[in-house]
Length: 197
Picture 1 (tube, rainbow, N blue to C red):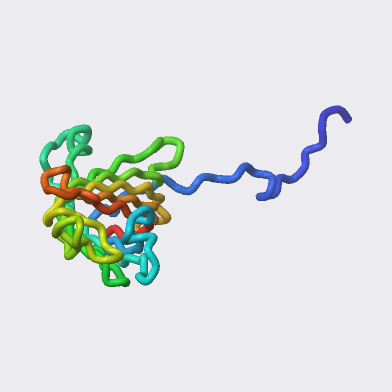
Picture 2 (cartoon, rainbow, N blue to C red):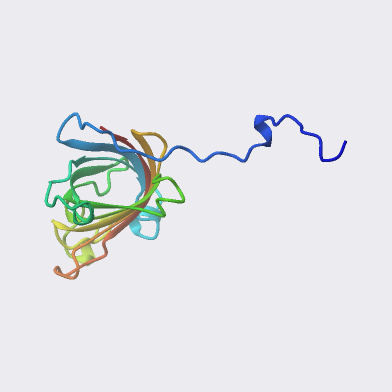
């Protein structure tokens, strides 16, 4: 008999399958699109993050609302951000804050990663309880932030685990863009988990 013998193929011999492509929930349950909760490290390179005697940990959360329907064209609608509100509490009694703005979401290589990897960008305003007085009188363990409110920019790299759950690595920066006398700002690093309705 000529030719190779035909052997049974087991599941272990097959190439690994990619996860199914992510599909957004078809019917939102409310005007809320997503809720997120997580933590971050308070500005590691500053007085708020490296001087001893204070906790460096923040607990934060945010609510992302559903996108307004601006265009019937999916291409243009993709540029519409989600209104976002959130806040962060510093467990060491240093600067805590609340913010309001907009979040844009971009899928990274959607065909390769089945629409599961995404990048978020946020821009808005932030109000805080940090120090805003003269630089020479800045309390120990605080940054000189100059004024409140300030601007907040943030980014997140995320992965969608399921239709509803996702995880993200985050970075955020807050400053007054030189509009006040002092502008040390805050830059925090952390992570979040999200639930999409």
